Amino acid sequence: MSQVGDTLVLYLLIGVIIYLMIKNIASTTSVKGWLFSSKEKSESISFTGKVPMILQEHGYEVIDEKIKIPIAIDLDGEAYSSRMFVDYLARNEEGTYLVMVARERKPLRLSGSALRDYFLPYFLLFEPSGILYVDKEKGSIKLIHLDVPDMKLKKRKSALSGYVIASIVGMILALLLYQNG
Image 1 (tube, rainbow, N blue to C red):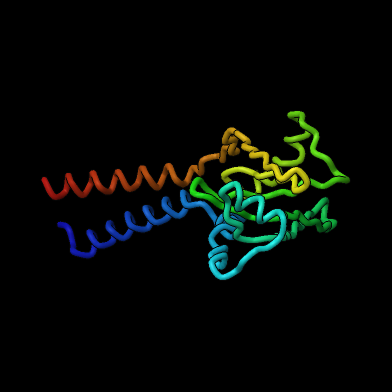
Image 2 (image 1 turned 180 degrees about the vertical axis):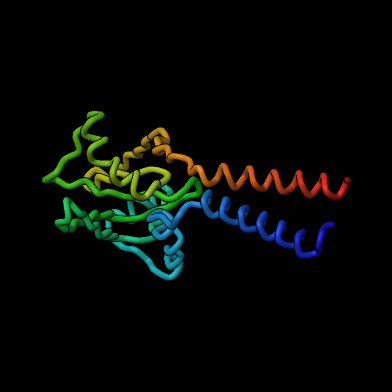
């Protein structure tokens, strides 16, 4: 005979398993979420200069400038540090964009491998709608989109999850058979 506590335990087990599945599916906080969600301060800050003016002329709103991202690197137990810099962060109705300003001492080579080497780390780190490359001398903007396929490493499925699912299905079937029989 089924006890009141048996049904409660079954529902609690199902709830915990559903919670763990949702927690596993939900992604962890990324640099993109940290960077893009914390930039609501743009309503009170006005950006001046040639680059913000060029961006405004092309329909973009500057929301941050001079972003410095510290990076910690560990190589066989030896610690290294580095940084990545983004000149501006801008947005329009289509999304949020990283802005890189052209440097005279480091001109942009227009080849697939040079563009990949320069922009891919920024794209993978921030996942922006695109990257705007601004030449303030010419007053021009180049919009760069990178189409990178989703190449997530496949995790080995835990044998435990299969046992848990089989156990739940077995408990549900046993409960249904017990109530009907």
